Length: 152
Image 1 (tube, one colour):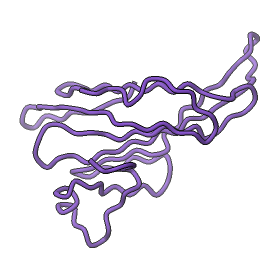
Image 2 (cartoon, one colour; image 1 turned 30 degrees about the vertical axis):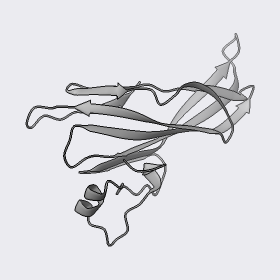
Image 3 (tube, one colour; image 1 turned 120 degrees about the vertical axis):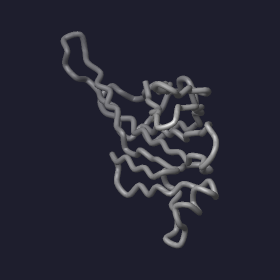
Image 4 (cartoon, helix red, strand yellow; image 1 turned 90 degrees about the horizontal axis):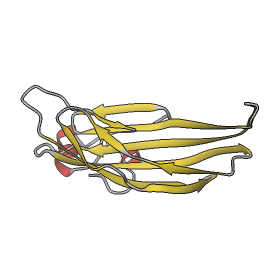
């Protein structure tokens, strides 16, 4: 598992993919928001935006807030468990939206278990603030099967 923010810890050009995987460091390089990158032993998503619109009783928008979600992990070359670092940051606020309460919970598809599904549960964010934490997974897929973590 990469220390701190796995989506922004890059491998140097001299490091091979195998060396990066063996060292347990991330090899994904996020260069623009809203992207998903993956390799055999690492994955990252950056800039997944969640927009909250506050409306009055007549349905008119009276405020808006945006949360940017980033996540990434290094996968073990051997073994069936891994950790994913997740960060949620409030990147915009307008009108009557001054803070957003960010709750995060992950799930896994067939053959995968989220062993620590919530890096935090709740927390008011104001503009520029972020919450970070780790979620954990375990998987024991059959030969040739694939698993896929997901966010709810």
